[in-house]
Image 1 (cartoon, helix red, strand yellow):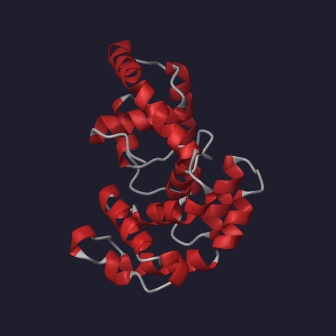
Image 2: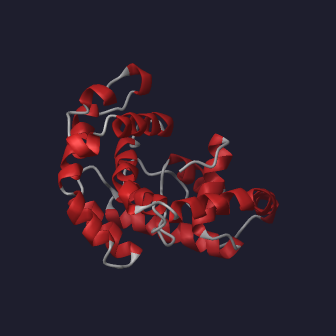
Image 3: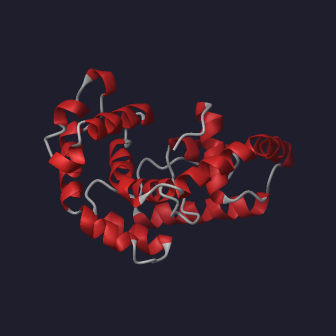
Length: 211
């Protein structure tokens, strides 16, 4: 991979500056207890085409109202103007279905399979999760082991640094894995672990090191 050092050097400088905060955030993910996995999964189900802030706010409300314990219809929470979630009808159904299959999900996560195998299982068995969302969930519980979260923030930076030529309008499995492979190669070439580069790109786009 041919790199433009005039662009890479500033990136490496920014990484060195933010590295302690990025690594601390990744340690936070490793400390997430399995009792919190449902709400981490709920967060990732909420984020597609909705803001991360709104998703976080919705999860806080669901937690406060004990959604996991009671299983009430969450649609009114998702459709609230205060923290509106797009496609709230479908996502409400996803939350209810995930709640009912949580024991199975937790069991699969406890097997110790590779991150790739866990992602494949999640995509096939949890309604509402694609490769991006499943990767996001596994990263947020410290189980990603270098899986790429190819959201718009990451894709814009991959294009900026010449890793991809254009941002796909949609993803097939083959396309997702192909770009993920390029992202991994780029991260290895510049010497930044992929999980850390992911959070660096996020902080460059949003000003925050968010989950």
